[in-house]
Image 1 (spheres, rainbow, N blue to C red):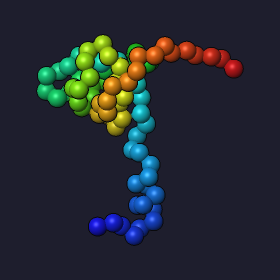
Image 2: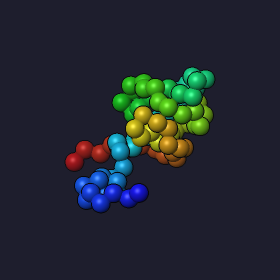
Image 3: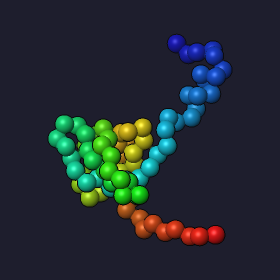
Image 4: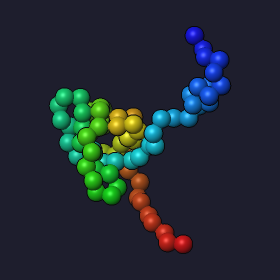
Length: 77
């Protein structure tokens, strides 16, 4: 049943958590993976659908899918 609470309807439009791209470093064998974030930190996330060495979209502590392996650049302004 749909809610009539306008705040709940608004929150449903916004995805939970930010989406980041990480490199999968290890498949733990229990439905989780270890991933290296861009800053070098390692996190454990739910999901094992992306292979080791590949990029993945991570959102809310869960692997959402494969990400393209594109070059990253930083520019100072």
